[in-house]
Image (cartoon, rainbow, N blue to C red; front, side, top):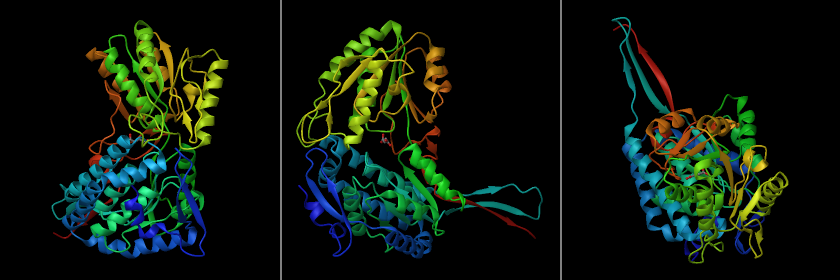
Length: 476
Ligand code: SIN
């Protein structure tokens, strides 16, 4: 199963260097010992990227695109190996891991194509002796920090637009899930990126590496996916050099079902939006608002479906929900449940840990939830669905918007006028209408308010890695 892992040159610890361990969260088994590269390695990687930057940017877009295409094909060809590594280190069911690897490959394909579509602009000058133009140029070296919940697709989503634009990159993958990133980088080497264009830094602890990336003058942009708290810290660290940032941070997604919705479709969508990746996505539905006319029917059908979700090792057939990433994640769910019960919430199913070697939690549904409960105010990041009852559209939009976050929202309705009104009124970067899943390489992924800055995916994702330069030619 780990044939791909065995082939990776970078995965063995270098003698005498500190190392860190990577474990399987389903079994607790040790998967690998990696070199713990600190600030000195990060600095060397930045300098290497900087040295490679100009040559990579000087290639034709077609040549950069060709390398991305080769990497895309290698990832497609190695989907099974990559998915196995991903399931082993992160725990998600193998089918979800394969789908994530395909999604990663789709970003590479998209940006291999977009590399050829970097356009400038000509402007009608206000005087006859001048010509005015805008050209787009790569921003320079980009420091990228990726999370553990989508350890393959987030790597591709961040670095493929940067590479297409002509930037060299340094990547620090999450310490819990660095192996699939390592495997993808090994394939990138085969794809033929010039030396120094892509650089990987393994580290057991992100703070020092993050600080070095944010404060090294050769790094021109930071791209980070993770918590809002860490996003704020990186912003502060980047401020002295006015360094550009792309941040994809926390959410508190509302999932609203109106009386006129197709309830079976809404239940399907809620299962997707809440339990994909065991609820460990930043776009997970966190608050399920159900209108009074359909509340009981929805709750009954939803609970029935949740009871059928099987929990276990992601390699076991039929498993829908793997382990949580660690025991802190388990403790957070328990705290949210305890707080809700104390304030009048009701457990409809689940509610407890599953005793096993790994960090498993039974998929849980709570009803009688109110906006004063922690589960409605904070991102749970686990398989816990909190159902809140509501009466009218204005009230629910007000409550849905009453958060510092603005990443994703979902709603189900059929009345066209309502669909437009609600879609426009929700203060979120992404709104799913009659769907529980919207992530795509073709669409701009990202949030407003304290959920982040910038967009990933689509043509907008490429713009994030390009600088605009105005050229004014006089004396004509
Ligand atoms: C996330 O960034 O947590 C969600 C990614 C996705 O839906 O693909």
